[in-house]
Image (cartoon, rainbow, N blue to C red; front, side, top):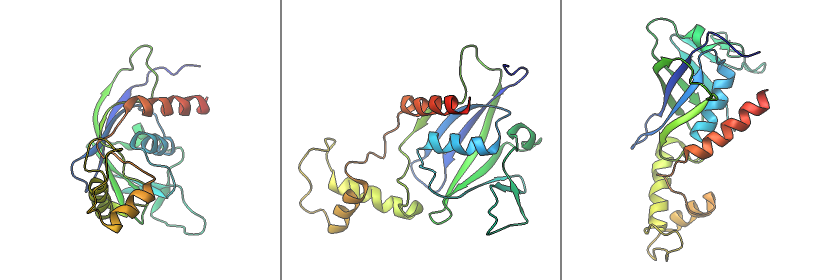
Length: 203
């Protein structure tokens, strides 16, 4: 049965403490539960879902509680609908991923609109710049990594001759990522192919 009387949120996902901004704009059903929103963010940003995460909405924290580390201040995110959590006055919230690297995302509710005919949701409609690699060391580690990659690949063509003055540390960065990395690269079409696969799995 198709849903009726539902709306779509336009969310802007911003990765904090990184310059220039890494961001995505995604349209999702307003009744999306947090556990699914987590998966949508992972796909849109380009993370691999290797680590723990947490939402902070208003004064409340949400995650999937661990029986080994029960936190009384933490509410179970499963079954928590976004439209029931975004109380009047709440126009943005936080999504934390990988507590070791400390990635913080600000999620801004930009708009609420009527679904567009023939569109499937969620859908990523805009964004800029590539997601940092997993386990790169948070914002400071990512800054060092991008610098190292630029030292190794000073030309637009990744097949161009490498800089003879590149350091051993720079070479290790290239070996760790497995080759060329473009911090400016973002492909919304590739993201939406992954979101389409997600929708199919959830049916």
